Length: 304
Image 1 (spheres, one colour):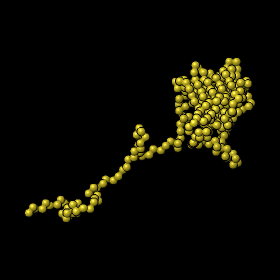
Image 2: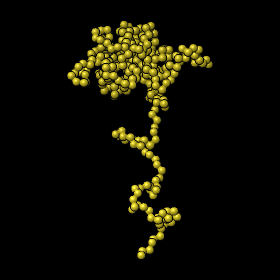
Image 3: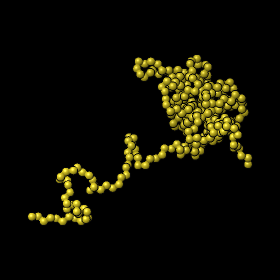
Image 4: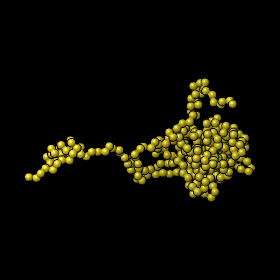
């Protein structure tokens, strides 16, 4: 057997390998957009617009690649390892499945799940003459429709779309940065994708008035084939390392309202040695003192 892992010979190669090593906090997921061998103009424009939305966390392959992901996944896994991308969008076109898109994700450089979508209507970014959001804007995702919660395939599609468009994880949110909305609606067996720019206008008070302006791209999609991971594999892909799990603290509990309770362990107290206020009435008599010293009970004095 030939070992496929070699020691880096240069510092640049060492830094490259360190970036791909497993981490407690993962890097932002990158997506690769691939054209099939028979992609038409509509599919090409869709891939370009999705690339414009995903930049800079995307790689667009301009050459056509003759592959069928549902039949052979080796080429996708090769491109995933080469470009270090865990998400992919594959576009193709043929007579049986016109304007075809396959969206999917990887786990350990192997296909986890993928869903095939057909494009029935498409409005490009350039067709809507409005101002656009700057590159790298993190979108707000909205899902409407009961199918995203009832149907297992639609539920997995929702998870896949969130993974694909969520962007980087940010510690803080700025109100002016909330300027891009991606809206997905599932109704009557179709998925409608719309993108809007958020306009903050004066309202006469501290809270601004919000208006949505369609920005593009706009897609009307229909679900076709699906390739979903088994429950065990899907559960394994969601497993978190032990370093991210919060450590349990002893003797601390919380109630339903979030109040924190702590239990303190103390030694047994001897109340006989407790220092009290110095008063004449609380002073010990000589008989009590001698009884404590000898460990015997004091004798009762005879009454005169």
